[in-house]
Image 1 (cartoon, rainbow, N blue to C red):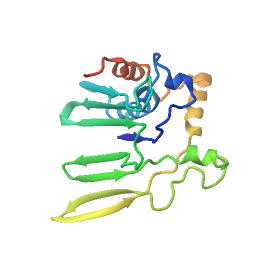
Image 2: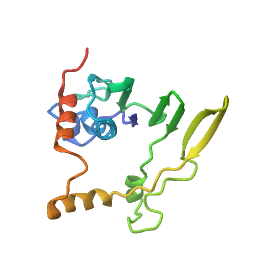
Image 3: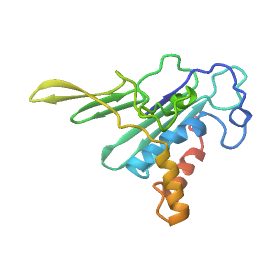
Image 4: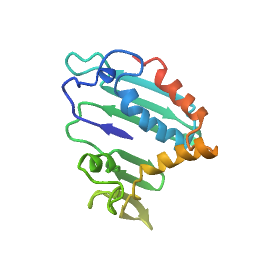
Length: 191
């Protein structure tokens, strides 16, 4: 899983760009990917963290990678970078029966910035020709299929927060998962 951006200059958001706890790209963007991985696969058996600084005058990491290992041979790589001009696939999955590749799927932030309202019918729908690609073998022949993402809906997050606060329904991210994430993010960096 990757989250790439290109911002060679130091940004205006002091809390992200000043050396302090929780600053840098791993905590900013990497935390979202780590959250997804933990929600899909649980707690990793081991985690190796590597961060580095490449932008001129930067005080915080602008590149980070995590290598996470799980039961049954699953290995997950997370990479985030502020210096990727040509974005790569955000999701790349290789397994014993095929490969799946997909660019960044969530269009909601860009739609909101463009003035599209969450109540509009096409809000949350990915753009045409941005589907994922599933490739597998079928009786020795390589087959590729487009896979469209389900419609995104940020409001489900807010609905879940409301339900937890008002009706004491379990939130989909557990306290334990948050602790696992913080343990990984705060562990020493491999040099």
